[in-house]
Picture: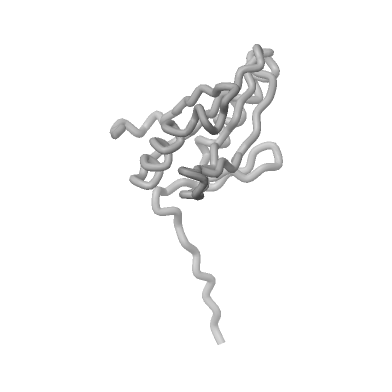
Length: 125
C-alpha cells in the first residue's frame, strides 16, 4: 500500500517563516518583525504585539474581525497599527477601508495606520 502526503502551496507563494520562536505568514513579515526588534534595541519604539484581533462592528453588529500584523507603541507612547502586505486582495481592501472608517471609534486614544508594502509589489489599488 502506498501513501501520498498532499502538500498545498500558498496561493500568493508566501513561505511561512520562523523568527525568534514565532511563526510568521511570510518571510517579509518575519523580516519586518526583526526590523521592529532592532528599533526596540535602538530605543525608537517601546514594544509591539503581533496578530492583534480587532472586531469591526457597525451599529453594534459584528461585521468581521481584522487581524493587525503589528500594533506598535512608539518611544513617546503613541499607538500605531503596522500592516505588512505583499499582495492586496479585495477582501483586505474592504476590511482596511472599514478599519479606517471605524478607527476613531475603536481607538478613542488615537492610532496611526501604517501600510508597508513588499518591495516587489508595485501595483497598489
